[in-house]
Amino acid sequence: MFTGLVQGSGRVLRRLSAGNGVVFEIGSDVAIEQPVEGESIAINGVCLTAYEIGTTTFRVDVSPETLSRSTLNGLQVGGRVNVERALRLSDRLGGHLVSGHVDGLGVLGKTVRQGDFVVLNFNVPVELDRYIVEKGSIAVDGISLTVNDCGPGHFSVSIIPQTWQSTTLAELRVSDQVNIEVDVIGKYIEKLLGHKADTPGASRGVDRELLAKSGYL
Image (cartoon, rainbow, N blue to C red; front, top):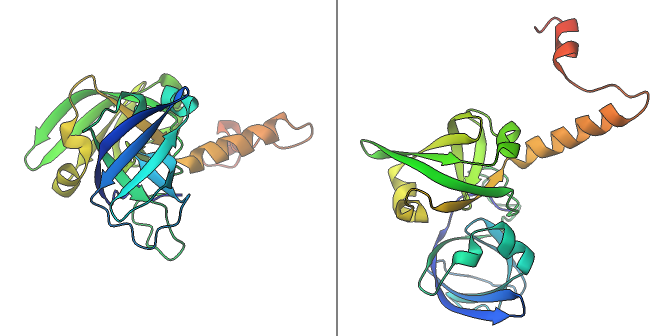
C-alpha cells in the first residue's frame, strides 16, 4: 500500500524488452535506505516490484497486462516519473490509502491558472463516475489529490505550488493520459452492498428507499 504522497522523481535510464513486457531501469532522487530486494515501489501510481536496488537506482519488470492498462507503455528513456516507496505501518498517512492498481486512464482536458495554484480538469471513463465524489480522494499518476468537483465523465483537482513543483503534473499537456486510481474504500463498500443485495433473505443494504423509511430523506 501507498499514501499517494510522492517522495521524489525519477528518470528512465534504460528500457529493455522482456518477452511481451518491459524492464525499466530507474534513476531516482529518492534515497533508497535499507532496501529489500523485491520490495514494492510505485512508479506513476503503478505498484511494481523493485530489484537490483542501488542507492538511487533500481529495476522493475512491467507485465503486458500492466502495459495495457496504464501509461507505462509510453515511457521512454529520459522520461520523468513519480516515485513512492511502500507505506510502513509506522508512517503518517498524510494522503489516502493507495493500492497502486490502476482503475483506468484519464485524459487532461484543461489547465486553469488561479494565481499560484493550478486547476486540472480530467476526463475519465464513465464507469469510474460512481467512485469519484466531490471533496473525496483520488490518485492521479500516484499523487493523492482532493476532488474539487465532478460530473459525468470528468473531475477537477486543485494543485498547490509544492505539488506542482515536485511531481510530473507540471509536464502534462492537454490530451496527455494519466493513471487514475479511485478511492479503494468506495469499491469495497459497493462490493459488500452488492453482495448483500444478491443474497436471498439478506437486506439490500443502504439505498434511497431505506434512507426514506428511516427518516433521512
